[in-house]
Image 1: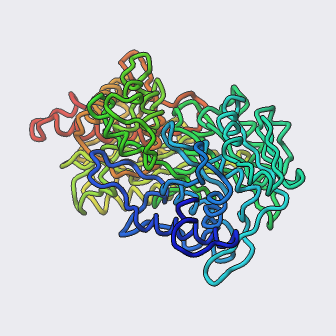
Image 2: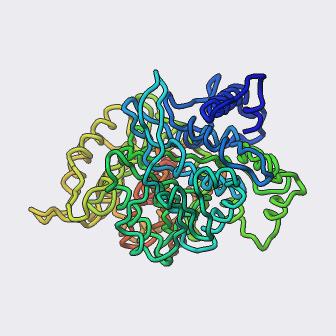
Image 3: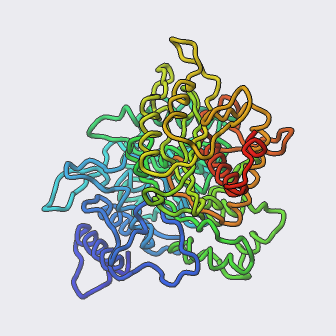
Length: 592
């Protein structure tokens, strides 16, 4: 890093002096480089890299400082200058190599998701070299700063599902590693392999069958373009083999993985999508899964960012980060690609806005739902609300969704579903007593005008009776429900609202269309619960004789949609309440 080495009159006499100078340069750079201000479109920031509070949020201890120094000393950019990471890239590296007070890595794996052209492949190439020769392993403490060592058995794999994808990284090594570095470390560069220090260190490109990598002991794996890894190209098998290799690594030689990717295409069930879903399952107060040591970092366009010639330059400027080389001008190449009608809007949003786009048959765009967040919304105690429950036994989720009469806002009272990670052989059945408690507590806290419950046809294992019927009978007695579910006929019941009945199917399809229109019109808000949102994202359009309803992507899918059903139902209840004169209403005409 020429700037660091040439700064000041002191004569640098050793590699260690150079390393210290480079580290000081990065420290000064990060301290003097605040985030951009007055952005027209504030990006969605996932992960720690862009977190700022009167200074950058940086790890307390990181081996990354030594990695930054090593790269600045031994690597070169395409112009032959000493390598310099952007401030954004440097912050990500510091987090990727962050350690706890025992010297263990805070994250065993990472995901670096950015728009195309951001510089993910050069970062991976630099880190590949560092993984072989830089101090990437914890050795000891020097005061409160961790000191690293190199990995004597370094084996780095750059893996993709096509050879072209590995070439994006491998072709950088001839210019990245100068003659001085090759001589110092005895490096030999080939098309598919880089060797060093008497062949004890290796970087290899891998695109072969997963069986060829299973059982290996790599120390660092880079998985390229995981949004393209799927079942048809062996991506899931490859991912499984790599995870197994990493998990069996020895305590003093941990194996790490870093995914470099663009936004995934929801519904394709790619490795990238699975990793994102697994990460999101760990978020929020009601997380469905425990943190499993993944650093996920992404900078994405906000949900309402328009894909237009007028808006695109400002949107791109907000999410390009420090990638100043990207041409985001109004007449630039990226904007022209966006305006090219042969490129689908969903792909343009995925590539250039770094947004997860909905599947072709998705009921709703993620961005539309995300734009309605009123974080943590709950109506005041005693407010008039409606409750809609979708009951299941084991495979699907059981949900209880609330809708506020005054605002129309919706929120999940709770969602009960099979825990993430539970062995497929282990049977799981919803705890009906927990659901019963939630219903009773909710009715005590708010003025619930109605509770409608779709009981499904699941049966109790011991009695053979309908799984939810006895509970619905008890809930019917809780109070004099002002909005009963069914008011006439043989199936009259204040609570049971069976979705299998044709009359109810027709009403629900109408409610589904109305719900979607209300989302488009931003007529209500929701609490931002991540489990709730995932069910909304999972819902697919399902045409029937009454119009277009919603359902799972296929019957056996593990992706739940029950909270989407419950949300439509709760909003439907409010609409029916408001559509009738409360004094003159004819419940028989409206409800049955």
